[in-house]
Image 1 (cartoon, rainbow, N blue to C red):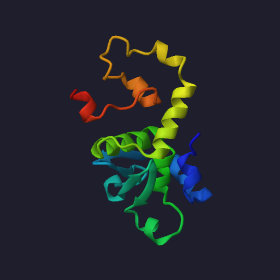
Image 2: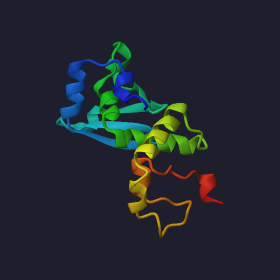
Image 3: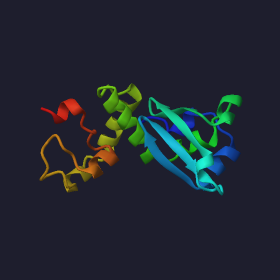
Length: 152
């Protein structure tokens, strides 16, 4: 089983708490995630880009991220919201031609082992083989098809 992204980030309890309770909004920008803190009076003044590599938020344009040894609250906010992190990772995979990291492969394999009985109840049956339903992609039962797979 692959470790949770928080296990691989150096974080403080204060940052973890703020990442959980502040009103963050997320937007995918290329393969990065724009994190906007809507807790502020002017949220547009509190937007930062978080870079994702190997399913981990590795950098943020927030000045504290570069000046301190621990991850900033924006990186942690992305790490604790797995659907945001997974979607950004899948977009990067599509941009990179579908080459999955070893970390991604082992997480996907573990998910498939855990969810084999549930896949029989999904809505994929009427869909073409190369076009899984969103539920299967989101839960990891099926990978997001790459452009090459869709064009066959």
